[in-house]
Amino acid sequence: MSKINESVNQGDISAVLERVAVHRAENRTEFVRRLPYFVAGLVLSVAFFFPFYWLIKVAVMWPAGSLYLGDPSLALDRFELYNFVRVYYEIPFPRYLYNSVVITLLAVVGSLVTNSLAAYSLTKDFYGKKVVLAFLISALMIPYYVTVIPAFLVTNRLGLLNTHLGMALPFMTFIIGTFILMNSFNSVPNSMIEAARLDGASELYILFGVLWPLAKPALATNVILAFIYAWNAYLWPLVVVSDRLMQPLPLALASFSTRFDGNFTLQYAFAIMVLIPVVIIFLLLQRQFIRSVVQSSVKE
Image (tube, rainbow, N blue to C red):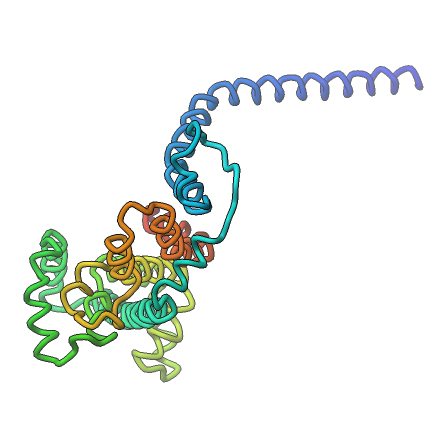
């Protein structure tokens, strides 16, 4: 009996070992098949990251003349914060930072509210809905620069020149954000909305109390897009702002680059100071952003 059990155990062990060997062979084959994609991804990652690396390398070099001394090198051989400190004290940086923060907050909050209201209305069936959607899609094809003069005239008529609200106004709604939220709201079961209505919920409560908690990825995507649009805005503030103390960071960076023309270490340091908040916001919301993209591309 023991010999039979021993033979059975040996048979089981050999079967398991055979399966392990087959599994390893399949893994090796799969790895070899995917290796070109990994290599291509690595090459592209290095190509995309290198400009940021060079931006950091130049920004942390001090004195500025050392950039042109000796043989060129890609190594980060020194790390000095002098350029960042000098940028901070050469200009009223806190004031420019305050302007950008206020403009961006107004744009983010405004876009969340207006895009949500528009998206929720477009989830309903009403007469002329297809015309409205076609109009919105057609508006996407209009270049932004064509709308600058009409927007300036409206802003001037409202008395919002040289104000934070005037600079944030064009970024407080955008069509792409409306479509992203509309697609997210459409994925919510209608039975849940009807149940909320039966409980006496108003339309605003359904939007902000029921749909918003279920649309966090889409809301995060709106936040990222609105933040980038408002934070990096250059042309519109250039048109509506004449007071230097009301300039946001991109305008201040352009003026700073003109003032310190040729001093690339200071210019790059300022550019990094402008770029850091965008990177932080994206890193904080990247998971929700990716989830929103996936949900938008998958049809149930």
